[in-house]
Amino acid sequence: MLYILRHGKTDWNAAFKLQGRTDIKLNEEGREMAQNAAMEAKDIDFDICFSSPLIRALETARIVLHDRDIPIECDDRLMEMCFGEYEGIERSFDIPDCPINALFKDPVNYTADKGAESFEELFERTGDFLNEKIYPLLKEGKDILIVGHGAMNCSIVSQIKGYDLAHFWDGMTDNCKLVRLL
Image 1 (cartoon, one colour):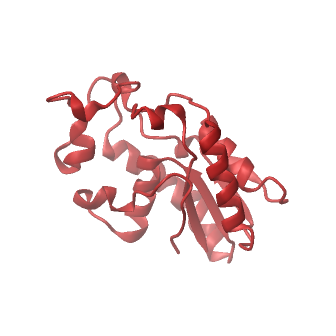
Image 2 (tube, helix red, strand yellow; image 1 turned 180 degrees about the vertical axis):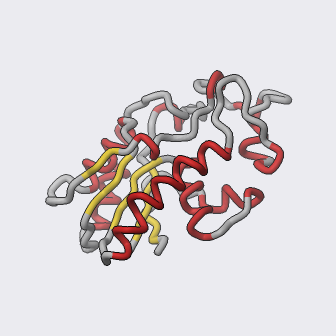
């Protein structure tokens, strides 16, 4: 089985700031969310957990699996999508014509600029991760947890479910909502 989990809440989530690769830690609410996710997942026998190395995801993984002997392996390919110079922008939807908004509102017509990552780059790295790490372990019958981020998780969900780019955000979940993919 394959499960995916988005990290707990951060102060930047609460302020509606774009985080991307900016390494923001969980806030107290985020830690509580992760503890609740740990209770939800307590009866699931994970063989391994893969996590983004960004602290908000790694801390979430550690809280969820805190009293269990389950290895957590960080992989840079699970980092959040890079938003370039737009990282740290607060309430981008309130900024008329802010180019990064197309990422969320019209992904088919999104063009990466100012150091932001493209969908092609995101899909390439997460696709490599799935092919190299996840699919072989699933063939062995392993139960896997991936702890990541909104856009990065959506790229994995999109590839597994076969969503086209117009439906990219259909895989978005709330913070710390555990989802079984396969």
